[in-house]
Image (cartoon, rainbow, N blue to C red):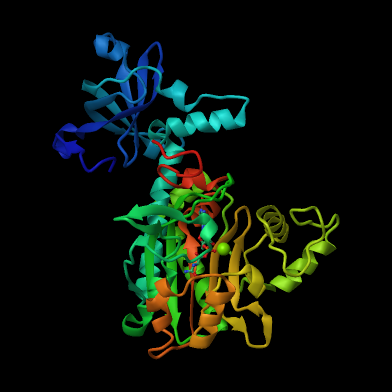
Length: 446
Ligand code: 4AD
Ligand code: MG
């Protein structure tokens, strides 16, 4: 079915299937004997043929353009398999009416080519509302929905409860430098960087929980994987070990991939966008941060840090190095045990080596980090120390600290960037094409 708005007019058995279809012109080919229209309606594509003659000589037909909204009537014909027509069918149009005309420049705008990559990208983003009408851009958006549904289904199967924490907050989670600050009735407040702290206050009464909410980061650099506003899928699990956390994350990712691929429509979008996609094999590779530092130095040539030196213990593995490593290894990596110094204040230290934390990043080929997670510091005294060490005033966190006072427990969780996950599955170069209207430094429109 092309559309839920398709109305069958004829009695199929007697007169053949005469149908009425609403849509927009996706592609137009005017030939001597006929005009071919590929119609789109957001549900599918349909080849329509208008025989040259009275139908093609009207003012409307002469001014058909990509994006013209139209209703067509005619007889649906089955075509032999192997033709280019979508779903091997063709509508032989005997009547049509233009509903909304379009100027003839849509194609020129959305297919504009430019030698200057940055200028071209800016043009495409200015025209994002028209770009979204294209087959690939809309396929990414539709796939996004199937991915989100696969997460929701998986969590339901795992009996993990969905909660909805606030986006307007007065506490930071991932460092002060990326906070979006604003005036909240005269008080300083922020757009949330992560719902983690709130999830940590829900597990005591709701059991394991997750949320799918927007997170906001004032990222002052332009990269292909950083947005100012992104969709954050976060989970928090109670009474677990670090190993339980790693297994859960692996299980979650694999279940989502399985569900997406098992859905024929979603699998069709993957085939269109990323034909080489293969579901990752389990178990994922597990690598400690310390071993990754060594691995980077052992490559020929060695993969260097941002200052151009060999990585030493305590260095951040920056985006470029991380990507090189992931692409070279070519499969998902659970990178664990990052140094305490470079990680967030709330992370639990490894009991066998307090220089490092029980933390994990999931790295995917082509994208790099798609998940960040950890066990949480659950001892009250240790947490108070951690605020001090990180110069974080503890007062605004009273409710978070209280979780360590009223029946504390070993627990942990993670956050996954939906746009990064989608960039991986849909083979997108940048997270910017994985949201409807990307937000990043310098862009807050359309
Ligand atoms: O590694 P991050 O900063 O971890 C947290 O926020 C934890 N508090 C989550 C938790 O444990 N509940 O972010 C988690 C993930 C990253 O791995 C990445 O996929 C995504 O969020 N992410 C971004 N995606 C797009 N643009 C940005 N600026 C992002 N920052 C993080
Ligand atoms: Mg991270």
